[in-house]
Amino acid sequence: MTSRQKNSKSPSDFSCASCLVNSLCLATGSFDHQTFAAIDSIIERKKNYQKASIIYKAGDELKNLYAIRSGGVKIYSINEHGEEQITSFHMPGDLIGFDAIADNRHQSFAQTLETSNICEIPFEPLMRLASRYPDMNLRLLKLISAEISVKKNLMMMISKQTAEQRLATFIMHLSDNLKRRNLSGNEIKLPMTRYEIGNYISLTVETISRLLSRFQQKQIISVKGKYITIINLDRLQDIVES
Amino acid sequence: MTSRQKNSKSPSDFSCASCLVNSLCLATGSFDHQTFAAIDSIIERKKNYQKASIIYKAGDELKNLYAIRSGGVKIYSINEHGEEQITSFHMPGDLIGFDAIADNRHQSFAQTLETSNICEIPFEPLMRLASRYPDMNLRLLKLISAEISVKKNLMMMISKQTAEQRLATFIMHLSDNLKRRNLSGNEIKLPMTRYEIGNYISLTVETISRLLSRFQQKQIISVKGKYITIINLDRLQDIVES
DNA sequence: CGGATCGTTGAAGACTATCAAGTTATGTGG
DNA sequence: CCACATAACTTGATAGTCTTCAACGATCCG
Image 1 (spheres, rainbow over the protein chains, first blue to last red):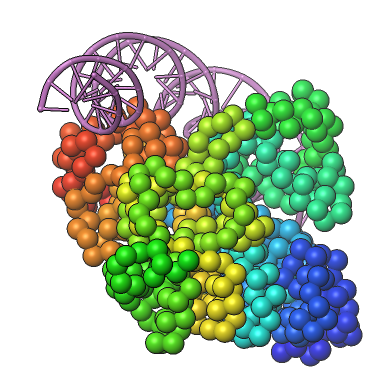
Image 2: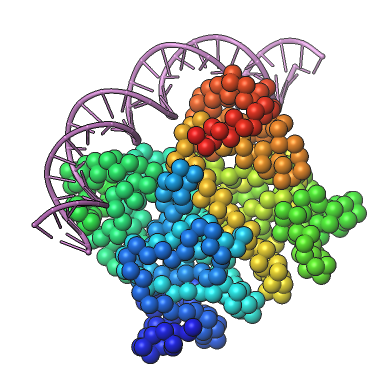
């Protein structure tokens, strides 16, 4: 079950060293050679997931954490009324599945938003490596810790900001995340639907649609279906802070 | 700077073994003797904090994680408009400060709600122990992972539930947390103000007050200042799930 | 090419915030 | 220990923001 057996391409094509987003991932390039090689050796590369594929389901046993190499993923729960509740969107370089560590079961569903390439990081071997390589252990802790902050900030956004501020913040975050990946932060292709955006920041589809129209009318952004262009970043920032 | 020097009482009075909530804490009683002793040895016991004491501030360097031995703590941020935003309440047995690991600085303020006894867990020594004791490392990861789930659930509560459901959920959670500490889950003394409750679950003081009155009128709870008694847990649960 | 999903816009209504005023509790100095 | 000032809490009236309901238009994909 290594990449050698699964992929016809040579293993190096999928190594962490060749990964464009490894600086953001667990196998960060800042590790010494040995540590980097160790983590690289336990990661299993998978073939692409098609759009709308389920990576794991709530209740599934924790076998792997997952690193997104390309594509996009949404994490969501389903409440007692069967409604979906999206708790995060993820881009290349993100690790997902941390919330399963507490009781060895995934707490949410992870589903691809588009065609994606996802790496599996088997949890037990990862724990063994973490004992051997303190740097890697700390890196793992930092990534998990960062997720707490992200959730906390999202919570604050939803509870304290108006609809307009929330959508502006959402767009800013998308832009920032693209920039961190050395992509243009002004031309954004939304991998998710209006419904999913609204679900995530706690607004209805109609409100999202109205706000996008309003932002466009004010010449802050331009909207063409899934494509958004930020025209005036300062005014977007003003809305966030207003 | 050990407990021996700080406290006139003998060290065993403040050891983890004597702690009533160690089953919930990092130094869980389920560790083998050696692991338990190791974590016990690095923890520094502090004298009591008075009500409204600041434990750490946003921006402070991460030197310690903190374990609450008795009392209560609120964690909050202050936004660009100077407004407080409470992101969690903590009770005995809880560890706080995890969100500082990502970039070595505390992201929030931690303040006692009442007279409290707080243990300091120095972070660097903790990391060294974590490398030596895989069980302890996993325990730490599980505690942090659990915090992600808690934040996620809070987020879902705020974004999907009505005011009535949110307050009912809040009271249920308080009750559950008391039960986990082997206390009565029906008699609750609120360590926080109405304002703080509202701030936490994103409602105004007035709404909290009105809802408490309404719950009392419906004979679901009885309210006497800071003291709440749950009269009908089933109906409270019904509100949460409605 | 056609059905289904997704997106847009308008009108009406619900929920909770805001503003206001008064009451109760808390704590501090005399 | 009391008096007083301050903070915390309660209740009512009004108003605003976002949701809901409805209808239609656009886009995607087999």
